[in-house]
Length: 141
Image 1 (tube, helix red, strand yellow):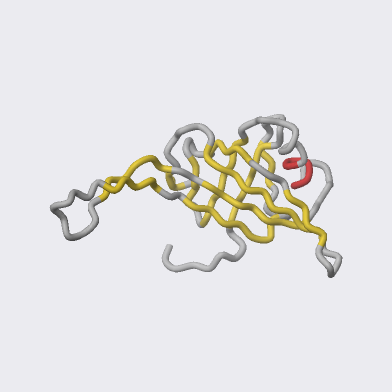
Image 2: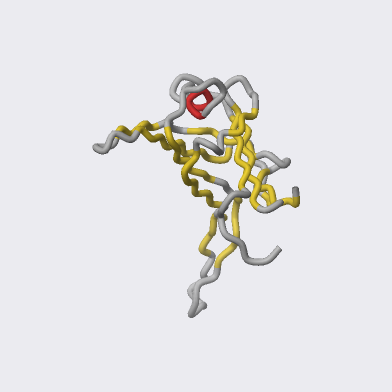
């Protein structure tokens, strides 16, 4: 494919605390993910420009959504984040390309924040970080 929009073709699932992958994309209003690499500055005093080495790979994600406490919906998935220390599988597929490690990534979700806005809306945010030391990669689905 060529250039595309972000409309209608994303698949996004997260494990609940019991290890069952749940498709919660209907509750997600927007998300952000990043696959940064660490960088080590190795510039010697004999250089006139920066010299660097690439270090470890990482993955972080922030999911944002609308509160839904239906069975197997987003609240069921994230309500145990404050009380359990379980790594969760995460899969993101964009236009036939899946971001993961095998092909799902293992993340630690570090917060499940609820916001009740002045207009009455009830939304949530859940940030996650790579947990298993496997390099995140894009693969064709």
